[in-house]
Each structure stands twice: as structure tokens, then as C-alpha cells.
Length: 159
Image 1 (tube, one colour):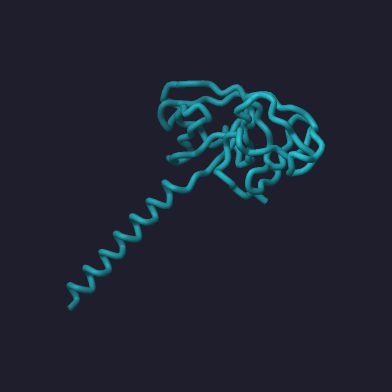
Image 2 (cartoon, rainbow, N blue to C red):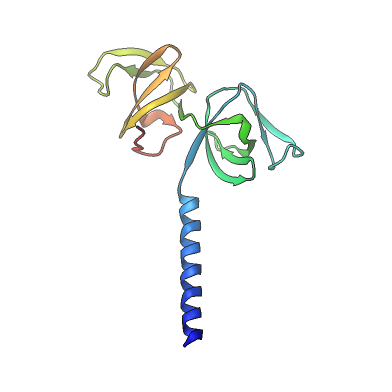
């Protein structure tokens, strides 16, 4: 009888652990570059060579793995590497992926246009509803459609 109970407990422990591991890999987390210069390394230590240097503050990156104070990130181009946590911020940002995206006063294309935003511009996210985000870019604040941005999940809601 004890043997059956141990087997059942072991089975559920393995099942739950596998489920939690699957959830970790499914959940996406975005951070942004905190500094105007951030080193992307090929491994999780300062002894590893620098693969690339980001020179754009507030650029969003997707965290795909963690090791101590290092985060393995992927950028909008699909480049992957390790960045020290001190060079990252929890501030949510997005990156435009098309030239001429219009920033609107309200979350409708029928509202007043404020400015056109260029390609690969980073903007701070203030709030998101499905298909629209309230952003702050340069000295402007307004709503942008999310079909040509990177750094969000599809129809993600941010309060």
C-alpha cells in the first residue's frame, strides 16, 4: 500500500514540475534597455565576449532565460544574447516596425492625428487595450495601433 502511495505522489510531483516548466517557457516577459550603451554577450558573465552593443535606450527586449543576474534576451531582429540585469529596466516599451505610423489623440483612427512616427522608434507604454496602446514618445503622448510594433503580445492589455 505504501509503495502505491509513493508512486502516486512521485507521479504527481513529476507531472506538476513538467507543467510549471512548460508555463515558464510559454510566458513571455519584456524588459527594456536601461542605458544608452548595453552589451549583449554570448554567455552569462562579463568574461564572455561582447557579441553586440545596443546604443538605443528604452529598446524593448524579450527575456527568454535567466541565470543569476544575467538575462538571455531576444530583440526585434531575433538576435539573442545575455545582458546584465543592471543594464535592463522593467519599464515597458515598444518599437515601431514601420515608417509613418500615426499617433492619435484617442484610440480610434477617427480621432485627431498628432504626429507620424518613424521606423524603429522606441516609445514608453502607458496603457494598452486590444489593438491600441497609449504611448509617450519624445514630448508627445497619444494612441498607436499595435499592428506594426514589437514588444507586445497579441492583444496584450497593460494598465
